[in-house]
Image (cartoon, rainbow, N blue to C red; front, side, top):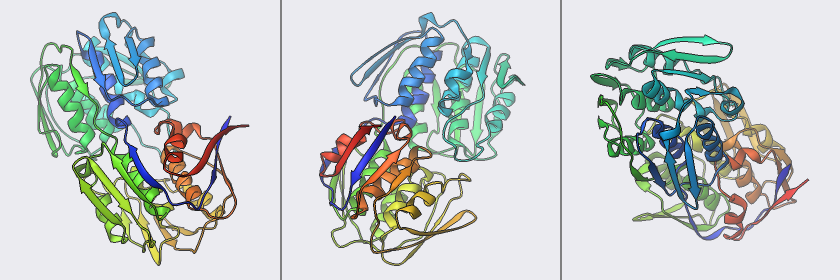
Length: 417
């Protein structure tokens, strides 16, 4: 099993290019289930989660060619509307296939999902929405079994869940009549999926707002689409630059996708410059504490909370971080404390008291974003070495992160035990 070994204390400097967004690429792949002609996705990230979705779709009969940054998905051979436990358990995003399978076949059998252990994240909001569209749903031996012809409906989500919004949006494209979804997620990834589906012949309006209208169509064709840049990866590299008192420019980024995050970076005293698709972050004199509360988009992204916590460990003053989206998402705190951080937890709030320095230590990743925060902490630690175990978590969402950080001057390598 691999570990990442870091000898920190060196400011990161240089430039890095952001890959395509994992959180857009996976539902885009799932959406291709409904196409009646090949679909091509450009700017695809080479990630373990993408490979897992590839295996899942291939297991159903999809023909997939993945070369470089291009993926062609040919759905003509799709025969099985079942997503088995062996594959779905590895990645929660596998559950995105439920809506498209139901829309294409009129039935689906999908295992309840696995993925990061950051709370219960129940799927009932997905199922209630599909039932509102006319699906009959039951749970059998750990599988969701859904069947029925979908009909347009008006449905308000109990919470603006990104995954539920995407599943219902995809399913409604093939439903009879008009569907109006309210209190939906507004994340940029939702807009990216809607753009792809419209390119296939769907009729979707309102993506990016709190109400989406879908006029169902009888069939969807193929499409060619460029996956949006990964805003969470961009934010992670910017955090690493600020945390190490470095100066890094992130290319292929969209600052409009990171409004609350960039505002908070500026509030710490970091220098933030935006020029087109480039974002530069520098903090040569260190940073001061800030208070943060995660919120659905356009609020502060929960997927950047852990990275910011690590960054604030050596800030001047006391920071308060309130997590409102997921429970149990401070799992990185215990490992940061092992490195010398002063963090206390009070329910869904973390109090981070800045310390002069962090020290390297053997630590263990617990989930995708927590693992990114531990990498940042390792880059900050100016005493000893940091050895991060369970790095398969970080490989789910960051492509060759050790090589890209090394290109910015970090002393970091992947080692095999």
